[in-house]
Length: 386
Image (tube, rainbow, N blue to C red):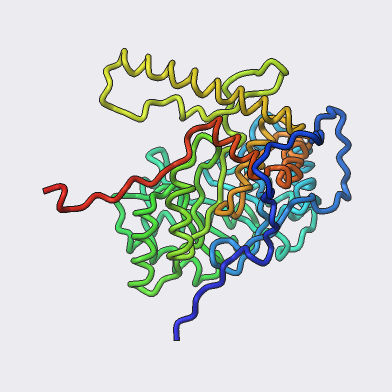
């Protein structure tokens, strides 16, 4: 008898949707607008923080995770990095995202030191790290050799007995998918990792990995990590929910804090993705491409300005609205946030309190400003192509 995997997040979701389609700005609540923030070391779980199953696995993670790439950057001291991590744990965050490519290997080494110094129980937090495929890496590919050596090196740097989830960052077209899934299955069977997933894979590549896992009786991936924010929506909203419903692959998002275009009149930053300024078409000449970039940049700037004005009416800033908007979408099971100071992390976490205010009317107003809701193209009949 076939058993259907449980839907992961129904038992821990709250209904944030408003019942009215009218914009309601009558009650403006300031979210972290006071520059003199008092950070408490014994802070309780942040209001709005929830715990969800990652994919259709039994692994429960906080709906906000901590991305460590800015925390262990050269400009952040060890004491400051430790303060950020302690604030995250005190706030209820239980997921830390790492990569062998982020700040070299320093992040894994420093995080391991902080974990042992703080004495946190291994069962109380989730570590995610990546096997990074890049032409700049010593081992150019996702061979079995590279995967196993990378996992062993990460364990040694972290000084931990196992890693909770290992992500394969970017697919390797030169390596057979069978070799990749068999290697990940071996890593899990050795107890070096509990689960595995992907990062920046296309839906076709994810499905190919899943098919190979079923064919060779290997452990299937549980999560895809991908960019998602107001200006990058198609993959996350059209294709990843389908992956979740069909094969149980969940969605971990990053992106709301990784881009900035300019300054608004009120001093806030206008946040849009730098990648959005790149032309999506390769058929233009160089001059046409430059004109297209300028026009697109102007449109994005106008949209970002309108989003900033809307955030001001809601009593928050554009960054907090971007975070809350991303979390409002149910396919997002975990949103990664970074910080270079405890104050910045505290400000970002206040966005969780904005979720109840994102009523149907507010979400429709955001859609009106963005005008980029992805729509799946209609199917084309093979008869029409003849």
